[in-house]
Amino acid sequence: MRSHSIRAAAALLGVSRRTLRRLIARGELPAHRAGRGLRVTDAAIDAYRAARSVPSHPGTQSALRAALRAAYDRWTQERRPA
Image (cartoon, rainbow, N blue to C red):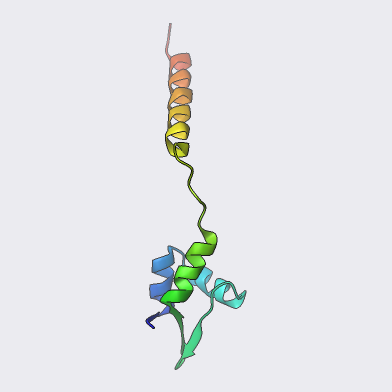
């Protein structure tokens, strides 16, 4: 089983090293000691991602994008001089 340093695991999860250490301290992300440092396994990273993933609903992004575009278009119309 492959394991990663704190720096590498933080990069893989897209969080800071400080945040990663907090996750480990709270028990949200398992880690083990290797010498003086901590290591996080691929399995732990995958499990953390799976637990935090939000299922996507088809069309949600496109509907949001369309609503934002419509609001922006209304706003720019209101700001144009007559």
